[in-house]
Length: 182
Image 1 (cartoon, rainbow, N blue to C red):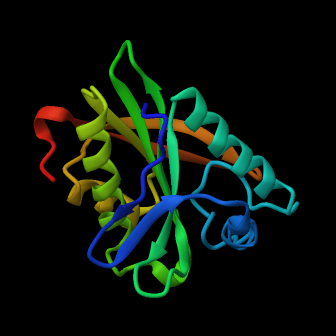
Image 2 (image 1 turned 45 degrees about the vertical axis):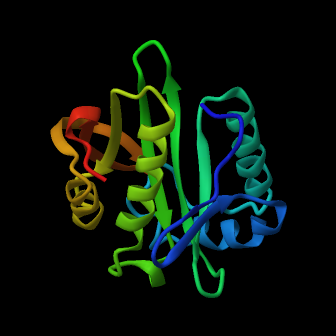
């Protein structure tokens, strides 16, 4: 991946690198049980998790294995969440797409807009052939985001997550370079 983490403007958003000042917003986002009800880990109980998250963002960017960007509202800079491309595998020319947005940002097209900008950057910058995403089968809204972006549902990972004792299935989605249309 590119050693420089990009800033990506869209019509309504600004995707930018994380800073230490984002720690409180990260804690608020990742400690919200409603936001994380379909996530593959339980809500954060320790605010120090934000420091680990930010350190991981820096490390994966330095290693070139991924990027995570803040999704901020373009007009006032308000933190809405984050999205990322990670797990960059140069041998397979593949990566994974992830996003997480505050509940107040749901249903407004922000996830689709942010992911589209990040995918455009990734397909333009990297010799990607495939981007994969996984979504809990109960999360119809997230599945719709992926489908709007052109991802195809490829299968089901049965009982692949157990979070706080709750077992769930995930759908695997894939997007190939030849199918990508920004």
